[in-house]
Image 1 (cartoon, one colour):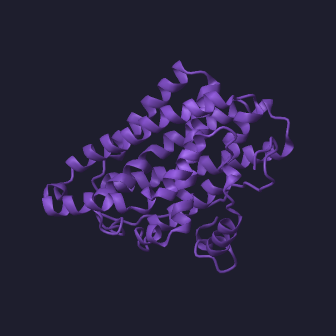
Image 2 (cartoon, one colour):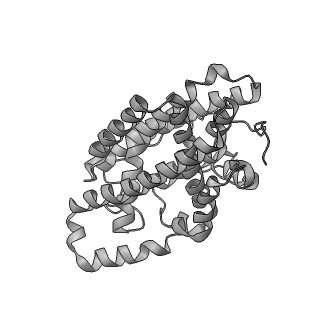
Length: 284
């Protein structure tokens, strides 16, 4: 799909809330995996400030959008991202109490994004938002489509929250991209933004996960650490299909909707929010 018109899709915010009772989570809550538990905790810690940055980046151009379909999607995008930030703040506090340095990572994320907004143009910030939205959508759809990825999350409240988040990331995956293109963003800037943010994104994961692991006594069990590190190359989130989808963003003429997610969204929307959906009782 390489059209200038946004695909007709309803993007709406759900009024939802999750709870993390004391003692409800195992210390290494990602299927007992040491490293992946720290990786997910770090990524969660970046979401509140990251979602706020995405909202600001898109909202700056909202008045320049003339397409009514896209205008409606932008409102849904903003509502979803605000809710994501709120729910991840609640999860991050729970993770902080479990020993993960989510507050420190949250402050570091805020400093970085503040510098982006201070020194980069609004259009470049929007290009960065579109690039990061592509990352989150690809990883979200990997979670929704790969049973190995779902198995890592067990059956706790973190699993429920991440599945909900993944569905909404897939729903609005093209909104920031379509806004960027609608207000005159160039292919050159879009691709260079992705190349720059890719380096900082993965570098940030490695550095902050390492710092987080250094504060976990279990990390000094070499057998446990080596086993966990050895499992990383086999992660479903690093599969070649995932790498190709991420890399496709750098091709001229790319659009997020080149990959059809209709059936995936229909399945999970029913499974989570249908009449007998597993998260209906979380809706307010």
